[in-house]
Structure formats: C-alpha cells, structure tokens
Image (cartoon, rainbow, N blue to C red; front, side, top):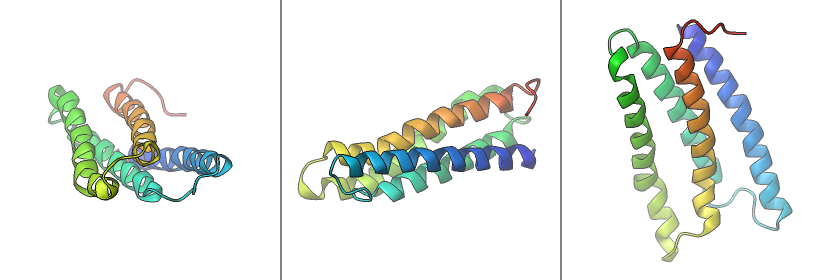
Length: 131
C-alpha cells in the first residue's frame, strides 16, 4: 500500500514540476513576473494536499470503502478552505483579485485534482495493474 502512495507521489511531483515549468515560462514569455502572486506556494500546497488526500483515502479504503467518494470531496473542500484562509487575504490586499493571482492557485488546483482523481481511481479499482 505504501508503495502505491510513493509511486503516486513521485508521479504527481514530476508531472506538477513539468506543469509548473510550463506555467512560469508562459508567464515570463508574456512579460509577467514568473514567480509572483504566490505561485510557488500555490503549487506546493496543492501537491502536498493531493499527496495527503490520496494517502488518507488509500489507508481508509478497507474500513470506509462506501464513503470514499464523500471523503474525496471533503479533501477538495479542505483545499478550498486553505485557499480562503491563506491565499485569498493576500490576493485581496489590494482590493481586487487579478486573473494572474487566481490562476496561480487555480492551475495547480485543477491539475492536482485531475491527478488525484486518477490516483483514487487506482485505489478503488485494484484490478488495474501498475506499470
């Protein structure tokens, strides 16, 4: 079980590193500051929470198999809570939330959510063989 979590974690970190690289290069290419708007924190928090959520669901699979979907949604609510508590006050400091500020959290959120979903599907579908 911990091997699956480790494999998921490595895949997530590698893929999110590539997405981070593309995201920051697109910002730079378009004349924006690549590491502004808490982008590093946005990626870091989303990756860490994705690993925690998938690990949590993996360990609870046997005991709470019927409730895993609800627990997965609770994990997404946790991510939004982190956004509202830690990111939103910083973004609202100037009175508005710019598109770049929004995207610095939302891009890693969406990609982590996609990769989390695939990870949880593997947890729920044990017949699928790992490569």
